Each structure stands twice: as structure tokens, then as C-alpha cells.
Image 1 (cartoon, rainbow, N blue to C red):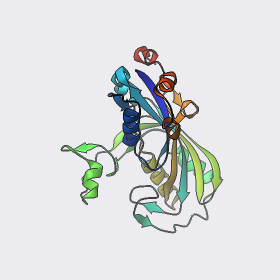
Image 2 (cartoon, one colour):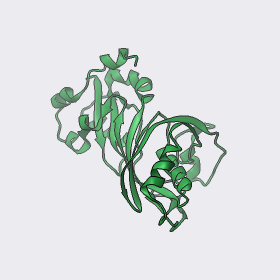
Image 3 (cartoon, rainbow, N blue to C red):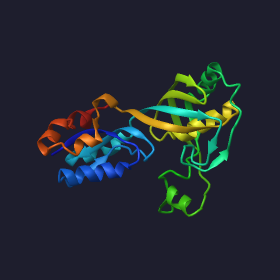
Image 4 (cartoon, rainbow, N blue to C red):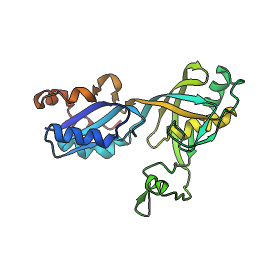
Amino acid sequence: MNGILVVDKPKGITSHDVVDAVRRRFRIKKVGHAGTLDPLATGVLVLLVGAATKLSGRLMSEDKEYEVVMTLGRRTKTGDADGEVILENGDFSGVTPEKVKTALAKFSGEIYQTPPMTSAIKYQGKKLYELARKGIEIKREPRPVTIKGMDMLEFNPPDVRIRIKCSKGTYVRVLCDDVGLELGCGAYVSNIRRTRSGDFPINEAVEFEKLRTTTRKELGLLLKNADYYKFKTT
């Protein structure tokens, strides 16, 4: 049982919950991933089964695409709806579609982001989010990422729906927080959905709930052959 399984992860569970469920359900010892999604996020989660786990590094480095609802008028410590509010009722009455598009354009191309304390980056053997839970904050160095496209899909204040195409390592919440600051009213992510990871779009993903009733034989038919991606160079 070897190959790539693209799952549509639902909200409220971790990526590791999905990995563990597949491992237990189909009695497979080796199941990995090509980039996690946190509990708030939904969408494309690429699972690597059996020998395909060797492709983790390569597939994890691929570009990602997201559809995000950015809510104006509030900043939170984590950049999403679950975080502590640090700015409430910012005035977004003057924000127009044109101003949003202008703000988005300022963050295209290569930019530098400071990783949030909620990230999984390690510091002296500890993940930053583990330190954050203890109330510890450390200095983080900005890192380069590439924003390959940001398009406004819908303007319905206070919500603005945008599509983001970006390199690996991009923190979408940090990006939306920065856009909110550029607009002068603050913003946070109220919904985030990964619609593509590398070569794998959302329309090729199987719903997580469907896996609960999928047989081992049916799983074999869902797995993508990993050989192509093993030798893929572009």
C-alpha cells in the first residue's frame, strides 16, 4: 500500500488526527504528510502512504493556494478568530474595493515575514507554540517568502474574500494582519481553505468523512502513484 492520498481536511481537527485515523483505519504503519493545516483551516492535505513518505521534503516545498476570508475591523494576537483581541472596532467605513486591491498589491512578490509565536518553528528544541502556551515570547528573525498572487474575490464588509498563491513557509494570518494594518483598520482571518498544494487541487481531494466507510481496496484505487512525483523536476 504505497502512494499519495489527497484529503479534504475539515475544520476542528488537526492534520495529525487525519494521519492517525488513516493509519488506524487501514492498518498502515507508515503514513506521513506534505505540509500540515491547523484546526481552523480546511482543504487540501496531502498524505503520503508507505514508500511515498520519502517524498515528504520534495512535496512540502511546493507552492500553495488558499481562499481566505479576511474580516476587517479587528486584530487578534494570533491573526485569526481564536486569538486574543488586541484591536476592536477599527473603523473600516472608508475601505473600498480599490483600496483593498491596492493594499494587496503592496504585498506581492518577495516579502519578509516574522514567524508568529503560534508556529511550529523550533527554538532550543521546543516548538514556538509550546513556548507561547507558557506565556513565553522570543525574538524571531524575519524570513523571506514569495507571494505569487493575491486577488480579491468578494468585497462584503467587514468580510473580504481573497485568493492567495504563495511559496512554502508563508504565514497567511500574518499576511492578512499586515494587509489590515496597511488599510488602517486591522484585520484577521475568519476562514481559511487550502485549495491547492503543489500539483494537487481541492477537486481531487476525498472528504475525510468518506474515509470512515472506505474499504482498504477502495483506498488503493484512491492512491496516486508516487513514481511521477519522485522523478518530477519542475
